[in-house]
Image (cartoon, rainbow over all chains, first blue to last red):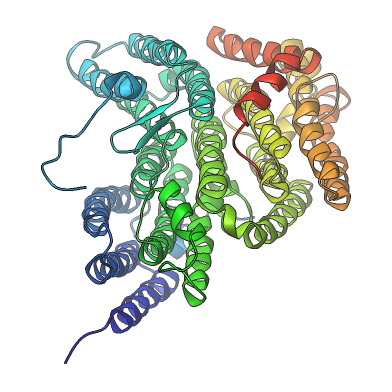
Length: 103
Length: 489
């Protein structure tokens, strides 16, 4: 059975949507950022699929995916720092407790 | 490009950014090993680095070219925005010195290092036309800005501001990447010029449904840029982050990432996707009208001056994105004029807010009662900045709006200029509300407010800039018309 580009794109779109849904509905900062990581990885799947299936300068898609992984690793580091900062000052890492400033 | 091909690097073209990046690392090292107790030498060192980079940028004037396989572009547009970004960063470093001395609990050297990294990211953003590089430069600016926004780490408001900025920023950049993946996938290139070529040549991989994919890619990608320029669909972070972040950082966030994002938007839209002008023009018309009305109407009822300036910055993003909706060469030069003017007036206004919050740790508009008696200097300069933000003569704010509105009228979009004018009139109300508080309402106490020297320096520079560009705008206008050559349709 051959896997086609369309199937991979649908998979990536599904993962992206699950990530977005999770990021918008979950409460814990850590889980929200995990969901955003899903969105980034859906993009990675897209990039690699396009790079594999198009005959054009394919290396760029792969390079792009590597850069996305590197930058999201840096962002994970920042997430941990923010979670610790919140926990220290407020005793919780739930995003709906961040409600000091409104409107 | 085959592996093993020799990479041609022109270090002269890369030097300004390299100076700033190396300077950032040096500042952090110097914080650890040399100036462990007093931190103001670090600030002076950062200013020297930024000055060196801007002088180095000036030596490139008149050259055009690319290096690192087109990742980095040297042309009048990139040099113009690099100078603007460097200048605003210099003002921010001066503004931060005394504020950061007050915050005894945090290490300060990193702050100047982060400002330098964010500046370098902005400079890369202003001078690149490759999707990979745009993403990396955007993240370099963003991550440094996130950390700066949370710099008062024992203050819960500041934690909240970094949390909101960070999570929304991540979602925005994930959307941008999803859009980039479609643009890359359906054109096969990551460089904007190649993408435009692939889209223009008919009968290639691009036809029919692929066009739809590329357009939806553009829409996704614009999400991250509306986040950075704080215009409508992704504006919700602005007031909260502006209120919670340390005030000099707020000034930084309101200017530097914004003008860098305008620089890259000019490139993406006019180099990458001139084919789809009708589609993105409609998008920008909606965005710009929505941001102007939302920003101005919500700013009317604010009681905190940082939130008010936050909403006003959403409105200003609306005025500037009008330029993209008009999309002529005049409109691009209007965007350039507005960006420069915006640096002076917005950093000036935030400098006055910082100077006042130096004496009392709150930012309510009520605190400005009777400022005219308590500190005539702060009151008169704040009045000038408010007049400039409202876009009235004799300040530079007038020319930013006038040139964009004229471009709209020339394009037969007079209704668009009219909507802009209506918004400028609405904005007069809340800007002059601050002036009313300063001069008409009696103060609760009449103690004199002392302004530390560094704030005075920044406020003077911003005032002189606002007034001089207001009276003699000719050189800025002709410069921006020269720079806008080659952009616009």
